[in-house]
Image (tube, rainbow, N blue to C red; front, side, top):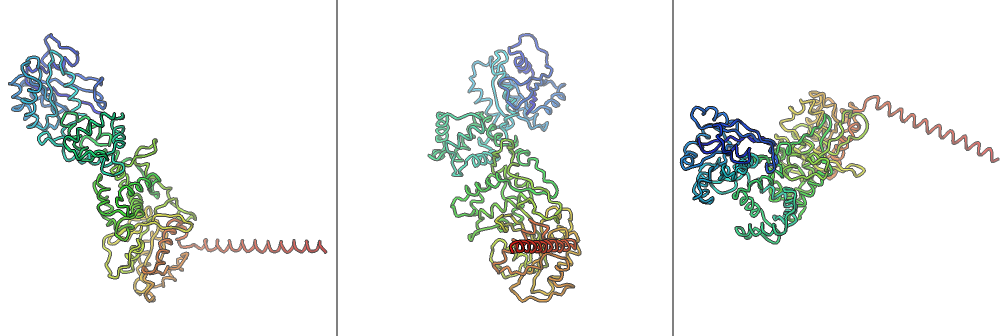
Length: 633
């Protein structure tokens, strides 16, 4: 909602006070009026723009001794009504008034008012506009609109102040360059995005049905067939190829809005922009891009069914060649209404971070995995892009983009038996240089084994789906930390909050490889609080004795780990079982911690109880058999 403050300026004798009095009284006041009227406040009336709460009108004097008050009022206003009434005061508009406004450093719209039109009967409306107003508008971009008035005849008085209100609520300056007679780049970009989002089938045209939906969304009323035909005919006069049997293309849509701005109907353009959450500076509303969404400690964010459905539909609409993958051109088209790929995607070297087909195109599985990872690591990014990409909530009780996300239950006691209530889990892959971490991530994404060794410096991420026993699927994110490993491992609170499992890897063919793991766990004792999986990589090579205090199987036995290290090679097809093991450790964390003596004793006690029950049952069965046998003889 806006409060409009109008500063009425102009030379002495141009009729400023008479205009204000005529506005308030509704008729021309013949009595003598005081030189400067007191400030008046007008409540909203019929015809007032709907987002205006109150309008304040301030009268001013052009006398030199009042220059200080004039400057103060101009600086406090958000629109100026500049009045002239004859040739001399008209000349002063360009020679004094507009340069004076600029010297004050104000950046507010100016409505130019040619008053006392009753005294200029020999000049037609069109002549005044052509000879007086248009030259000024082309030279001074701050002039929003122009109007001829007569306070004596009460002609266009209300309209003049309405233009002032509209100059604040629906400014022309951000939309249209009057000098170039064209829409400004920011306005074109916003309208292109609106066209993209309204083109539901992504065929490059707004069909009659899509235009009708667009009309209802923006104006909340249907469009008659005659109006639709008129719109198409108007576009065809300039761009005949922009209207086809398929509908109106983007060029025609932009041209239509340019015509609205040219003809002073920029209010229509603003209604469209605001229906799509644009602000006065043509950026999307902050509350729309970044709605309130809190994730408690030890909880995580995931896509809701509505969120997954939206991204599935977006993928299918964008896969123009129906090859099951998004190529570079299709991705560029998909992200056209956004600032580009999310920064986190660029950092993770998307699309190499997710699943691609043989042609290198992102598959639906990889697309959903990438968004699942983004939502897990940065839900604010997902919410921002849901807004850019046009997510519309089917939930009438929650129209925000937050309907596409959900928050999982916090997981605090990971040593307690049971599954965690989440479908996306994060694992860090730790190990010495050359242990095969990168090859493990390549295998996770079903990439071929690469022989040349290239040390990982920048962090690397991979995400994919993993099918767990029983058929349930989850998204597993694996991070190779690179040079950021010390910084990430030192941040105990963040590590314990975000990381679900750690995969410790070593090269089973390198005698100096395993010693890195006990040293790392000793340096960062809090790693013991995270579920762990130990993996011996390069099992296709000859296994060697490790130069460490304990051999790998001895070390895991000493820790009472549920199982010894998994021996596997990135070149084996069985490598996929490792990812199931890692995912299970994250989903059922109690199975991936060292077993305490109580766990072992509890297990033996359970065996003892079970054995005792079997013995008792056997004895009872023997007694019953004897009784039955005895009774039968």
